Image (cartoon, rainbow, N blue to C red):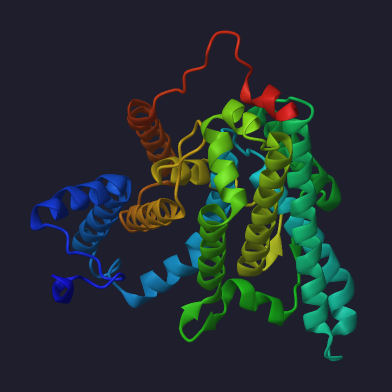
Length: 361
C-alpha cells in the first residue's frame, strides 16, 4: 500500500542474524590491533603488580611520555620505508647529523641573538636546517634505491655510515653543548601537563595516518608495496613514489633528532644507537609487513606503548642494558617468525623483475 511505503532515504534495519557476521568481519579486520591492545594492557598490569610503588606513579608516566617520542618518531620513519618493501638503516646516522648541523647553527647565532628577541628566529632556522638535512638524506636514499637499483638494505646501510662519518668529522667525536634555554622546551617542556615531545609525536602520527589512509599517495604506496608490477601497470610511478617515501622517512628522522638534542641539551654522532633495533622491532611488532604493502599507524602506536612499558619495567627490575638488547633481539626474531606464518613471503613468478628493478622503470 502507498501509505506504508518507506521513504526513499530510509534504510531497512538489518536482520538480527546478519549483525553477527558483520561483527565477525570487523573483529577479523582488526585482529592484529586487538592482539596488540591485549598485549599492551597485559604488560601494563604485570609491571604495575610487580613494582606498584615505582611503576604505577605519575612521575613514571611523565618520564615515559618524555622518553618514547624519540624512537616512536623513528618508528614512523621505519614504517614508511617498510611499506615499500624496503628498510631504512640510515635513520640513526641521519638523525644525529641533522641534530649536529642544527646545533652548529644554534652555537653560531644564538649567543649573538641573546637579549635581542630574535632567539626564537634562530631556533626556527636551526630546526629548518635539521629538517632540510633529513629531507636531503632521505632523497639520497630514495635516488640510490629507485634509480641506481641498489637494494634498500645496502643503500641505507651505506648512507647511514656516511652520515655518521660526516657527523664525527664535524664534531671530532665530541658532543655539542650550550643551547638557548628556549630550545629545551621542545624536549623538556609541557603544555597543560602534556609533554611537548608527546604532542609532537601525536601530531606526526595523525599526519602519517591521514597521509596513508586519506590520500592518493597512501593508496599508491600500499599498492606498490603489495605488488610493484601491478602498481606499474596501473600507471603508478614506482621510482618517484619510492623517492618521496624515503624523503619523508629522512624528514621524520631529522625531527626525532631535534627532539633528542633538545631533551639531552646536546648533540653527538653516536646518540640513540639502540634506537635502530627498537624502531625495527616496533614496526614489525606493530603489524607492518616486512615485505611491504600492509601496516597501520594504530598498530605501531600500540607497539610503542607496549615496549615502553616493558622497558620501564625492566629498568625498575634492574635488568642490564645488555639483557634488554638480548630480549629485544629475541622478541624481534619471534615476531618475524609469527608474521612470516601470517604474511608469508610474496610469491614471485619465474623471470619476474625484483621490486628494485621495477622501481627503476
